[in-house]
Length: 247
Image (tube, helix red, strand yellow):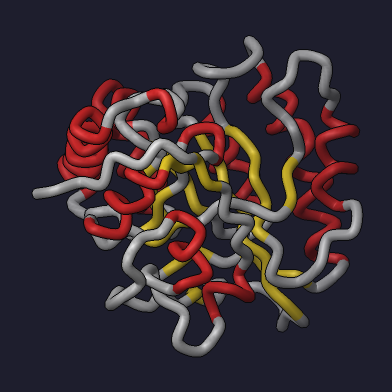
């Protein structure tokens, strides 16, 4: 397989509105044109409505990166269950191989498993063959643990190289970044600040980025995320914004 060895990096601020746009695919010019990658073909990704809860006026995607984590992931899952909320977990393959039971629990509780890579390293610093191996190992780790191959992908630090974006497309993976974040990986961020950053100017079709692990961020930062999550979910419920996973 020939992989383009482009050196540029690319950010894709996609939202649910982008994913739901008629005709939008993984090969859409919206995602690929800036990297100079051919935009032909691709499969459309549809949002799945929540299984329960009051009728919503809109939807948001709640996403968590960097797990599974032995403390953070179970605690996040417990809070989500209390609010009947669904989320997407962008898993790191090396962590999945250590804790496959947590990846299975995510699936069993109705959430979506997605790929964050096998190693959590920035794509622009890695050569195309190394990235190709990372994609293959990450997909295999999740599939071995859950029986399901991931369909969504988010690169570490939210930055693609053109080569890694091409590889995601070649693997049939849909890139999904975010439009709101809590900056919850930082040492100085409080639960109140995390909630305020997520909820400020939040609107339907936003994609929210949080973290259920502290492997690649400030120590114990996931505890502040867990503390902020009930306030975030309560605010979403009050605003009649339901969370969605992806079919």
